Image 1: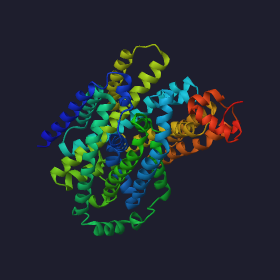
Image 2 (image 1 turned 180 degrees about the vertical axis):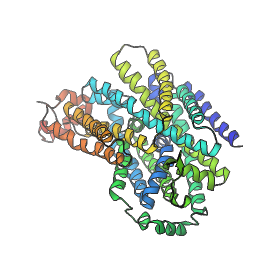
Image 3 (image 1 turned 90 degrees about the vertical axis):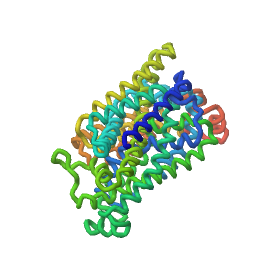
Image 4 (image 1 turned 90 degrees about the horizontal axis):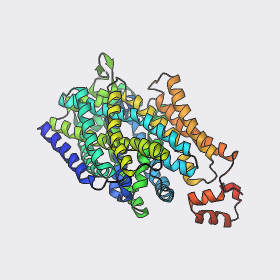
Length: 504
């Protein structure tokens, strides 16, 4: 029965891939769905890309074990900073400016905004290199769950997941991704409510009140508002909530939405979706200690937090619930994987190849996009087969990519005075902070979230400082970027042109 339902689920995804094939004949259709995606589909695409196997397996287990119920602060941050504010602050100007500049990718936008083709090349390389470990972390989370619920070998599960992702993504592109995201999002919502019910009523917890009392008996700080380590918790909130503002696979959803009227309903739906999904993961993960008598499960004789949630599902929940939760995690992960693969492939096909050889044929770019999707999936699987901790992989890649892009992207949308040198300073400072400190501390998982948070925050100060002491862009360039109405309005208000970045 398990395999029948799983096979049916796979079949639906493949059918969607074939259905979407006719709408993905050109680059614009394959990568952005020709910017025709409605609010509900956009919201679910954003939410399902945000939450993957990483949150349910790596994060829910390890973060819940370390912070207890105080990990619910991450839920608040994810919903209101990572979703609500992200849509309110970024969606409208991103769509307007990318349409005006005819930009389909983050590197393409940065190159046009700052008149720097080199930004496009470097940005594309960053995406392709550092989203690989993120994708690998998602595959690892899926495979751990398959191994526990279906007793399928880790490597075999990896190959199955990779093949399925490749088929429906290579066939249907962004349209296939968004349609499957909608179906997967519905599965995730239903699965989360069932997960919360069965975990709370399981014998080791014995109901909400009893569970809280048992957690308090282990350590009273596991049920306190700030938890055992408030600074580490704050770092996780910043990393997971501000990070989406600078992640290309998240920002892509703003590029593709149909029109400005669709933005507000998408904002509301994505925020509610985040509240439901993040609560399900972090709330249940907070009680993980009770299922293992405060002894973390072992893998090859070593404590491994990635096994906490899979073993809870396999050992304490009814088999049909385990299957449903497998589909929940599978749904969350497949959508994230597809978005990661699509964005990473576009970094090479659109930003590197098409950017360097402008006269390359559309058919060649399309073929390269599809080939790179398959190649990127294979590379992610290879990395996932190397033993490591999911949380470390995800945090390093998330912090590095968001740290490099967030400040240049945000200031590029709102502050005309941002200069080319300022954008480069922001990108390089985020990159150096993330990688330099991560390797200095030997990829210590306990400090990686703090490093990622610093890599995002510090460039927000670096960009304006460097921009104020370097040459501003010409009035003509800024009129092309922000629109002539923005320029004339700013100047007629009596503002000094240099204050806005308009060269004399």
